[in-house]
Length: 152
Image 1 (tube, rainbow, N blue to C red):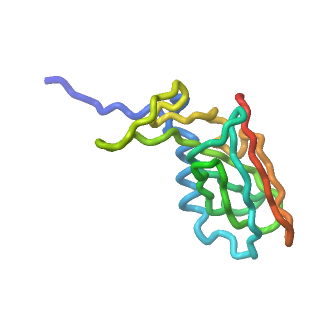
Image 2 (tube, one colour):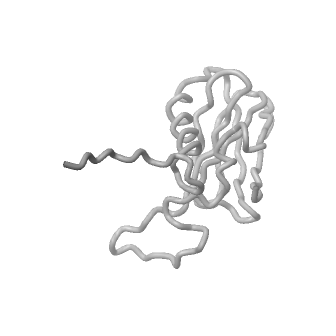
């Protein structure tokens, strides 16, 4: 009789939603809920990769101390909106390619970099420690902060 041992998923495969980006994504959605009770200031901007706006994903802010803030969804035009207390933050961006289409929906021609389930940006941006992205939210003034991502 042969014993079958279930294989553990490879959480370090590059370009998938396993591993660190998924961890940051999950942590941002669960740990950030209600974490900061300070007054929040409006922060908005566009997230782009190599000059093109991202069409889906999240932006998560991580303060120097404490829990991450609630993440902001990246809209189809690449724009995000969130509320954050004044201060400095490390930033993580997790992007998603368009989800697979349902039967009957019009499908766009596939792009080489837009394979469903794969991130169109390098994984390093999914970790606030490796993204290299930092922002400062200022009190009582507009905070338009664009996040132009480059290949790493």
